[in-house]
Amino acid sequence: MSTLNISMLGRMKVSAQEDHSEIRMTHVVQELLSYLVFNRGRSISRELLADLLWGKYEPKHARDSLNTAIWRLRKLFQNSQINDKNYIATSVDNVCFISSGDFYLDIAEYETLWDRIRVNSKELSTQTVRDLNRIIELYKGDLLEGLFIDWVLTERERLRLIYLSCLAELMDFYHSQNAPEKAMEYAQKILTVDPLREDIHREVMQFYLDLGQRTMAIRQYKICCSILSEDLNISPMIETQAIYEKAVSNSISKPQSNAIPVTTSLEKKPGPQDAISSVREAVENLEHARNDLCLALQALQIQPDR
Image (cartoon, rainbow, N blue to C red):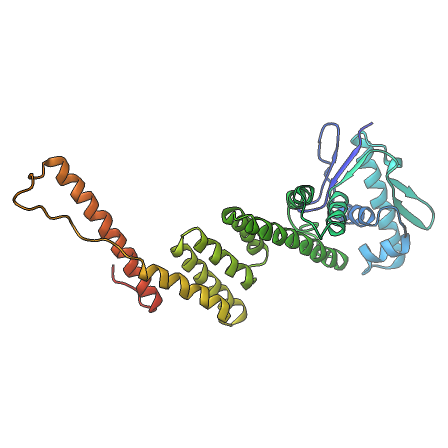
C-alpha cells in the first residue's frame, strides 16, 4: 500500500509517496481534509465539522454532507492504494486524522525546524543557517492558497511571519559576512511578500551602495516612494531619505575624466586604429557624463530632454 504525502504551503497537494500521483478532490473534501490534518491527533466533533463546512444549512443536511465528504475522502485514498484506516479514525460523534503509517506533512517539518531555530536563537550556527534555508525552501506560498476560511487566514498569517523572520535572519547573517549580494537576495524576497517594509527598502539601497551601484540605489528609493505614496499616502522616513541623498551626492561628486588627448606637432600622427580608439574613448566619456547629468537632474526632480 502507498503512503501519504501532503503539502499545505501554497496550493494544497495530496499524493501517494510511491508514485507521486496527485489525489484530486473537490473543494469541500479539501477543506475537510485540511482541517483534520492541521488538527492531526485531535478528535474533532462531527457537530463542529458540520458547522464549520455547512453552517448555513439545516443541522441534518450539514451532518449528511459531512458523512458524504468523509466517505468520498476515504474512497479517494483507497483508489490511490492508500490505507485510509491508517489516517482517518471515526466514531459516532468524532473524527480524527491520525498517522499510524508513513506520513509526510510539509507544515510539520516547517514548524519543527522553526522550534529548533528558536531554541538555538542565541547562536547562528551552520546548522541553523541550513534550517533557515530549508524553511524558505518549504514555503511554496501562503498556507492553503485559494481557501479563505477564518481559521486558515489566522494560521496563514502566523506561518507567513515565520517565513519573513527567517528571511530577515539570513539577510542580517550575510550582511555580517560582508556578502551584500546574498543579503540583498533575501531582502528582495521579503519585499515580494511585504512591499511596505520601508526598513527593508532602506537595507536594499545600502546594499546597492556597498556594491557601488548608486543608480540602482536611487531606483530602489523611487520604488519605495511610489509604494508608500500609493498604499499609505506617506513619504519615506528621514533615514531613508538620507541614504538617497548619499547616493545622489556620491554620483554627482564622482570625478570623471572627459578630456580627449591632444597630440602636438612633435608627436607621431595617429593612424586609423588610433583614431578608432579615440572615438571609442570619447563615446565612453560622453556616456559617463550623460549618466552623471541624469543623476544630478534626478536629485533636482528635473526630467532631462531626450
